[in-house]
Image (cartoon, rainbow, N blue to C red; front, top):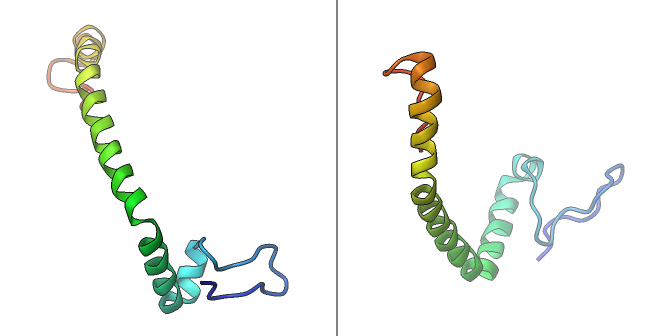
Amino acid sequence: MAYMTWAPGQSNVYGDRELSLSDIMKNPDLSFWQMRANFEQNWQKMVISSIGTAAFFKISKRLLRAPIANVNRNIFRPLFGKGAGSLRL
């Protein structure tokens, strides 16, 4: 569902599936319909990706807890004192 065609003087084609910030600013109502069409076509992938990203961050946070605590304890606290300069996730 292309909402725009090639514009003279422009180096690329607008529409089909890709939206840029300038597309949204120039034609917000047409961009809304393109975003809706993209969502309808790709909502399954978006849901799976968001679940995968959340799981990845939870696992990474748990795995990195000990190394970050070690850095805080051995590097930042001696340099900056107990109340400042610690890394947080």
